[in-house]
Image (tube, rainbow, N blue to C red; front, side, top):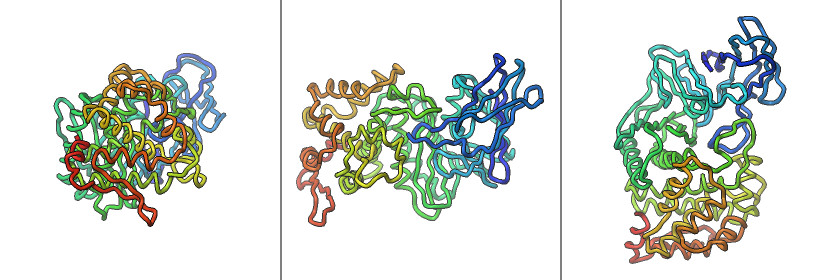
Length: 471
C-alpha cells in the first residue's frame, strides 16, 4: 500500500491510497473506528466527506455501506487509487492537526485500508515544505517513510514544522529522543535529564526494553491541555498553554506513557492481540493496563529520585483522593467499568455509576504492591508481578486474561487471593479502612478529616519504612 498525504490550507489532509488488488469483485475498504490507548469508539470516518476511486485512471464504483466501510468494485487486476479528504482538526494526543506552521498526524485517524491488509507493507509519502523539520518513529527521509505493515504506520505519530526541538541520548543500546513543537523553555535540560533518569530506572527495574528506539513526542498547544497516548516506540503528549510551567505534568505523563511500552504495547490482554481496529473490543482488564501504569508511573518518579519522597506522598494522595472523594461510592465494579468505558467514553457518566480504571485500578495496584511488601518484608513487590507478566506474556507475544493475571499474582503471593479479588475488583465495596491499614505498614497515615477530605501523612519516626517503599 502506498499512501500520499498533502495538507491543504483549509484544514484538510488530501490523501491517496494506491494498491494492486489480487482479484476482481467487491473489496471492503475500512477505516478504524477507535485507536489503541482509548477504549472508546471515535468513528474517524465522520471527518471524510467522500471517497473517489480510479483504476487505470478511469473512475470506478466505491460506495459507503456502513459508518466506516466502503465497497469498492474492482473490474480488472490493475492498480487502484482511492482519493479522499480528511478534516484534520482534532487537537489532542490521539488526533491530527493541519495548521499553516505545523503538521501533526496520527495515521490511525485517517488511513483507510482494504479488509485483512493490516499486515501488508506500507510506504507513506508526506508532502510538506522541504526545509521543515520532522519527528516520528517511522523510518525514512525526505518525506518518504517505510513500514513493515499498516499496524506499524498507525502506531507511529508524525510531527513536522519549521522548527522541531530534538535531543537524543543512549541508554545502553537503546536510542532515546525528546522531540517536539513549542516554545524552547518547555524543552529544558531539566526535562530531558528527568526523562533520562526515568528511562534508566524503568529499564533497570524491568530488566529489558522492548524497543530499540523510543521517542518522547511533545506539542505545546495554545490552550490549556493535558493528554498523552502510548505507542510501541513513542509517546505523543499534548500540553498547554505555552505560558504555564508544564514540567511537573510532563515528567508524570512521560513516566506513565513510557511504562506503557511494557504494559499494553508488549504485555497485552488477549482481546487486544492483535488489535482489531474496526469494531469495539470488550475486555475486563482495562484496569490492569491503566491502573498499574498510573500507580507505577508516579511511583517511578519517587523511586528514581526525579521527585522527593515528600513530593511522591503528595502525588499518591492526589490519586487516592481522585478515587475516594469522587468515585468511592460508585455502584460499578472495576470489571463493569472496564466494559462500560466503551459505552460512556472518558467524560462524566451517570452520577455514582462508574469508577475510574485509572484511579481505582491504581488503588488495586497499590494494594497488591503493599501486600507483597508486607508479607515478604519488601523482598517481593509489584516488580515481581510485572517482570513475570513480561516473561510469561510479553516476551512470548501471548495475550492474558483476567484469570491469568489472578493466577500469576497468587503465584508470587504464594497464597489464594480470592477474597481480595472479589472485594477490590469484582464488587464496589468500601476500601478506605483496608488501604489505610496497608499504608500504615510503610509508614503512611491515611485518614479522612472532619471536613470529609482525605489526608496522607508520614508517621513520625517511620522514615525507614517509607524509604523501603520507594525502592
